[in-house]
Length: 364
Ligand SMILES: *Cc1c(COP(=O)(O)O)cnc(C)c1O
Image 1 (tube, protein in one colour):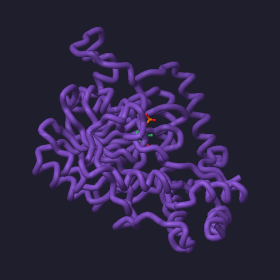
Image 2 (spheres, rainbow, N blue to C red; image 1 turned 45 degrees about the vertical axis):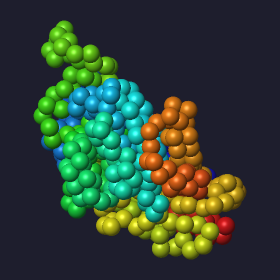
Image 3 (spheres, rainbow, N blue to C red; image 1 turned 90 degrees about the horizontal axis):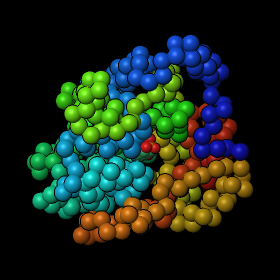
């Protein structure tokens, strides 16, 4: 079976380093907010091109904590995309703010600046971009739009670890970047984990408090926080896995290049090429096909897995039905949701497997 992810086939050296890190941790007996978290926060800040990284429990919490650090909450609106993991919108709702949904560009499935501009109202405070599938694009347009309209630019980077745009890392353009290290993300832990990146010392300090009961110093709680700490275990594993991330990312790009060069079935549509190769880290390789269900069964019959990201846009979910949205509608998000399909693209794939997927798609 050619799977969407295949952790069991990861390099032996990586596995051995992880096992010995677990042993080391058990010997120290220090499991929460210790040296491993501090070390990973430094390493991730450097890798993500930000001054600070604050380890948190997961990507959803990173969004909620980031918004709370900016005092974005009840009565405020945050514009984002309906074509994303539901957690993006949930983070806004959990902060007490109202998500407003703009449409996506049909060639990239990324937020469309014109649609976002149509969504801006008197209560709009921020635009939360999602670098969907690992693709970061048009940051100059977003910076200009947010500056001229007085909005905070925010980034959901759960799918875009190490993606860069004109020399700058995703997560360093906005007031904060929210990262998830869910196991299947490009940098994944062996459980739930996340981080907030920022250049702003005030946001960093407040996020460190909010993740830990709102505690400023031991037993002092100046505000209502939560428990969303990154575990020492996950931090230790993440620091090791980070050493492999650049290699794994290159491998994803080579697979994507192969698909782009070899897929030639007119029934299968590719998404737009990134402006520069470094703009895309191919968390997912997504194509569109009108006969998606038939394509998925065809692939399955050849021993190839596929998934759909995402079949039901946010505004079609019950908590999303009444959200304010682009007055023109969300047509491109709907079309994309009806036809998108993700095919295997992970760092353990062999050349033969990539060729087999490509042949299977062309044979459909
Ligand atoms: C995975 C994901 C999240 C949520 O991250 P968790 O760590 O699972 O909470 C948020 N946004 C996007 C775009 C994601 O892909």
